Amino acid sequence: MNHNVYDVLGLAAAVCFILALKGLSTPKTARRGNLIGAAGATLATVIVFFAPRPAGDPHHNTLLILLAIAFGVLVGVPAARKIQMTQMPQLVALFNGVGGGAAALVATVEYLNLSKDGKPSTANLVATVFTVIVGCTSFSGSVITFMKLQELMTTRPVVFPAGRFVIAATLVGVLGTGGWVIASGGNTPLLVMGGLALLFGVLFVLPVGGADVPIVISLLNAFTGLTVAASGYVLQSTLLIVAGTLVGASGTILTRLMAAAMGRSLFGTLFGAFTAKPQEATGTGEVRSVKSGSPDDVAILLNYAQRVVIVPGFGLAVAQAQHTVRELADLLAAKGVDVAYGIHPVAGRMPGHMNVLLAEANVPYEQLVEMDEVNPTFPQTDVVLVVGANDVVNPAAKTTPGCPIYGMPILDVSEAGNVIFLKRSMRPGFAGIENELLYDAKTTLLFGDAKDSLTKVVSALKAL
Image (tube, rainbow, N blue to C red):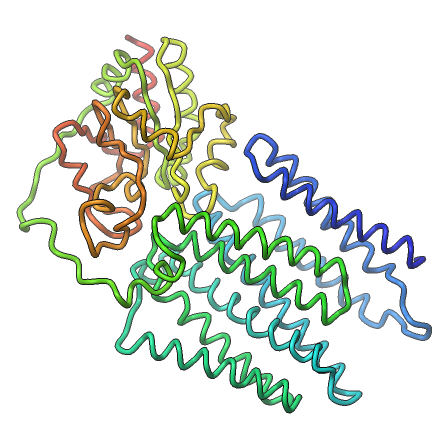
């Protein structure tokens, strides 16, 4: 392929990536943005096979590349089609980790190839060291986020004596061996550096509590983007540099926005578990009663309400009840009730989880109201229907210093006239803390599977 044609096609792929990010900035255009991004990625993959090569440089690895692509398709397509929305955050974490690990491996292989002809240039060494360190950190850190999300390990922060100093010492070791690689160009230092970076990734994520995992996913995604950009420099690929920079920049912006939504600094999110004060007991140990209701009770409350706000959470995804909640909202709207969805920035277990879930049910975008906009309306709201959410409405974020979510802005549902919780049990939310709002006199609990409960509420509402 002619150099000019190749460069133009690469530019077209880069433009697709930029347009994809623009489309993903709002739910209304997210689907189109995703398709544009997929088209750009496909174009970028195809043109690699026709990249201009030096004379006498045969395509030795074409068959291996095709086999790798075929393997990726065989794994990726069934995963994308069969994974439930409840498992989407885990899938995102794994895919993100694979991207970082792949960039680190590519940089390592290219480094070994360059080393055959002598010591690589200092610029290539620096880029390689950066890619391997950040890529390995992203890979192992993403594995830990996957295990937390899948509940293969505790979702609480994992801290140990002198943990801060162990993490700091590991980071110093990573940077020290990185300097060793740049100075000596040896293979052994590179392997030692990669191993320490993998360890640092594990230690980096362990102190993060379950409620903060979405922020870490976004941060590790930014790390992966930076590794791709750096590997693009090593491979002299402008397209990789552009794509990686876009991912790194957008991931960094999203991370900062999410940290702000949690009401804390990024440093506090990552390492706050080491400095947090012990949480005081919130109860006396006695069994407290709650007010439970029936679907008929809930239907009557909703039927006579003028304004209803639905607060979706991870439990909505577990029950796959998004279509039923849309049916309920449409039924209320037909009765003249003002209906809105209160969306917390970190509801669910990944950025935008609730937006994606409700988009599946074709919920009108105009009904999705962000936290800052919906909070002032709660005092004028007759009923708040909390479907599978807990931490994002937990008053402990304001009243209990030392708890994992203290300082996080929440949806002020306690200010509404009535609060209805749809819950399977009294089990705490992902942060592992009790919600005092469940015992409030204005709160009614409807126990059971969210989809089944909502179906019964819809039937009772139609009968009124």
